[in-house]
Image 1 (cartoon, each protein chain N blue to C red):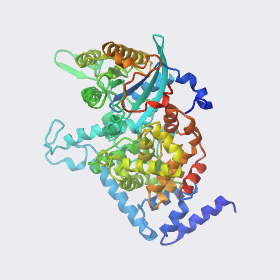
Image 2 (cartoon, helix red, strand yellow):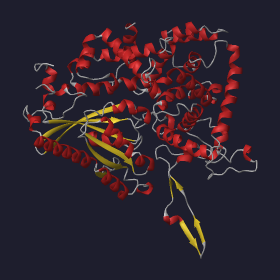
Image 3 (cartoon, rainbow over the protein chains, first blue to last red):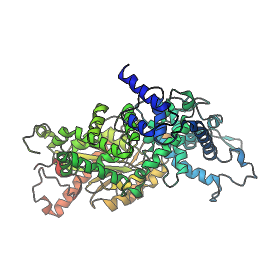
Length: 385
Length: 219
């Protein structure tokens, strides 16, 4: 048997137990989850705590969560006046600005949605995955033509004078309101949805359910890899529910890293500045010369590591490498201490260049990490233990 | 960084500038700041940029009036969450490109807030140009040229409409900003000759208390 097959068999062995030993699972996944049989999708669900170790609870958990997610969609995605619940005399209308008005909320939501819409359309532009149609569009959305699609709510609307038609004396008919979609992320045919539309809905629901945090740019980069893994699960039963599962896995992950996205927590230990300080301290300990050079150049960690840490390195490496890094990060029980080590390894591996470069070249180098075998980076990170 | 360092030799031509200006591009998210910078520095356009988290950086050297001016251009994240991180870079910046999107009312309404940010966090003499980007999207325009111009007049800054996509006025904005900074510099030199105590040639006149100054200065 090849080494790869041995690893696959080893992991499947762990997963076959009625009660999965999370410790062995983490130890195993730390060295990378084999890219087959939907193993990553399942292991991430376990390591993020979405599924519990007891296997016989899974089907009940999943059914419950899928039902809950369906409710979220009905309550929060379907526009007011559209649902069946709205037949009670109808005092609510779009021009009502009372705090109780669903329409008031609707228009406020659209501001959040506008930002999400712009960002999901530029998600992982180097691969075509997110622009392709999903096999499992959300039925209650696509069954209503286009009106329940979130991006339609915020599509730029143009009303040009040519469309205003006068008939005889009094009647003015406005003929055509054109909505224009971004060319490359063209809306799908009737009854279909692209993956980016699904991601848009998940982020929107997350923002609605976490109003204190809302949507922050960069969350799209965090959700991208998770969704990709869930939506390309070869197991049909899992793939069907990629949207709901991704929502809960993303929520679980954000529960751990949400401090990175909250400005007022920047100074706290788990906030982003605390993380950058940890990285800087580790670098000083492991490579004083490089640390001193960067300090003397006044090249502050914020210039590069803010993005590295906030986005869990998702913008620094191609997607397959990001998945590999996240295997280790999710397997790390102390969670983000390994992430800090990976970042430190990245800097140490560039030491020769850093020691020679001037300020500008060093900023460029660190902001555009050069292509490098991810195994080398992770090996270095592990050696920093 | 010793002069005998081989890398230093290789980079010598790059170091050979008369002035270095630190510039920042600011404005609401998705107005096109990153595209604008890419158009200028790399002469390329793609609508497929990821959103900027934190701050990005490019360098370009230009010639203005027989002077080599090295521009250090910082591209900032637009969203509110990132303000505290990005305003830390305002100090030492000599010029700002304050950008809105002519198809987005809110980005225009935020211009005043951005001006307040500049006043609060930057050097008093920092120069600003107001830029209405995406002027290729005439069909979706919601901010007329006149409204942009009027606001710029009120703020006492210069104004351009640009298109990073069609490459309209991008270079002009940077060149004009460099000129304004140069003018401002000679004004302050006239009024305060002590500023040139070290001799003007090769001396950076950036007057920056903070930021990344020494990296390029071997003199």
